[in-house]
Image (cartoon, rainbow, N blue to C red; front, side, top):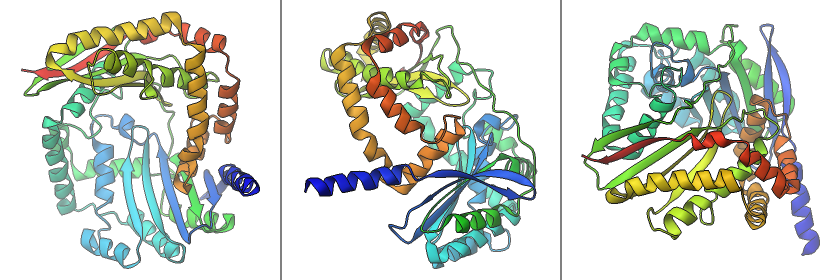
Length: 429
């Protein structure tokens, strides 16, 4: 049995370290390709990821990245939404698009034997997207309905108001799905221009994995990218969180208070000390029961069912953010307590036992975060995209294991900016 366990560990380690970053050339443009072979199942997948093509680049059309992704899900002009969906269904192919804050993603997955057909359909979609007035009107109606639905989602309102507060007058200072006004003003030619300017070779990174060889992966990727223009790329801006604490309150017909908070965190994605931020945030509020937030706010005072905060480290912005829900009559006490817990954390740091527990949990849970191919590919993509270097997470685990109490507390005490908390509260009218 012991030998069997060792064999499993060796095999898992081999899997976790097998993703590689290669290069392919399409129309003279060199494009990064992240690849991992996994023949466990006869499945293949590919993502075309376009940098600086998410909501951070919505410009004068808030919500246009999300709108464009939804419109690409309407299939091709030749087949229409229904005809294109039937083609996918007949061959058990999944093909979809979505946008995030920094990126725009086209995702393809199928059985290996149908993957060539899937790449062909992806090419058709890029050559002939369904930019018809009827498809445009359908997406607009769905988006406007979604915005209407969100008017009674108090978690969403509190979270959005916080984002608008701490990133006001910046490229992040708008709702990623847009507003009723911005979508009403949107025109089909705006979406066409957005797609043509952002889905281009110079912004592309390809992530491929599954039951195929590297040469097959390169061939599929080159074919998928063939319809795209060379285009141009732009540097991703770094957007600063406000440093002066502010508060926004929305009055709604609610039976409890929704408290969201955020503070600047002066740690960038590529910083060598970001692993310390991960450990510190785990102890402060990301570790669930046993974390400072949960212990002080729920266990000792019973002010909330859950209280959470985490480090939010991206290429374009960083922060410490969190939330809790509490009784209406307890919201002021809860806000005060959040400030006190964080101030005490910065001033006194953590204990030896807290650090030991954090190390045990982080190292013990790491295999669970890399069980499936998609998790491993995403991890390698983030290592590459954020400039950390492939294999960073293994190095990070080693750094965490060696982290001393003094090193962590010195790091925490050097980040007094997390005391500069801004709050967004949804409470009763």
